[in-house]
Length: 83
Image 1 (cartoon, rainbow, N blue to C red):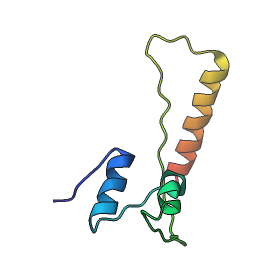
Image 2 (image 1 turned 45 degrees about the vertical axis):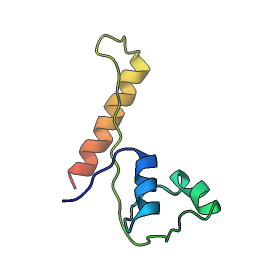
Image 3 (image 1 turned 60 degrees about the horizontal axis):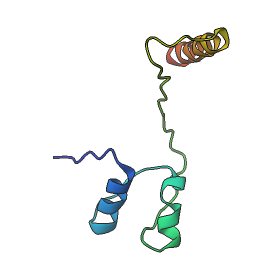
Image 4 (image 1 turned 180 degrees about the vertical axis):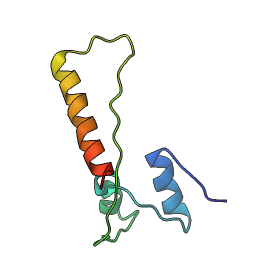
């Protein structure tokens, strides 16, 4: 069974203490590299897709500029998924 971790420190702990590996942003582990706890290699020629979410309380007043930002995000998403 594949393990799934959602906490960065848990992931780094498992990688450091087993034969596990992970793909993550460099800024999340660079201090561990400086301390010589972890090593890394750069992945090139690989397209990675990330998802970001806009989160707000359901009863929050959304100013017009924020609503426009949400529309722009939806427009970009719709254009990318149409390809």
